[in-house]
Length: 96
Image (cartoon, rainbow, N blue to C red; front, side):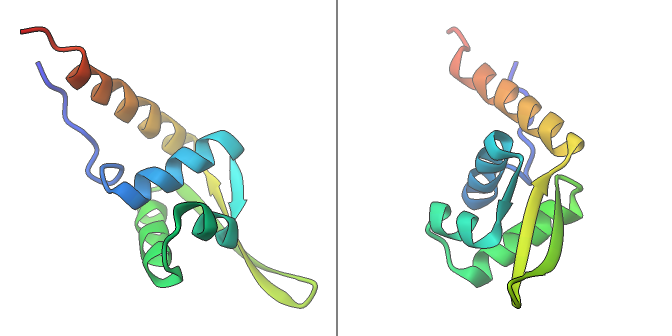
């Protein structure tokens, strides 16, 4: 029947972040903010939820004297994303 969808990934913004990271593996916070068209505050909260779940790693550093936040997808994050996509596909392929 229908498989459970990961509630962490089921949020539109968190899913967008994971979709971007699955293809690039690592991205700057500013890149994610621009691509998702989200506010810095909302994106920060959602990235923290992904981090708490173990799906992303966050590294804060300085680049040319400016703060830089890097987000990187983890192996558990890749696995969770793949399972989410597979489970979502089961909703789309159910026969009557």
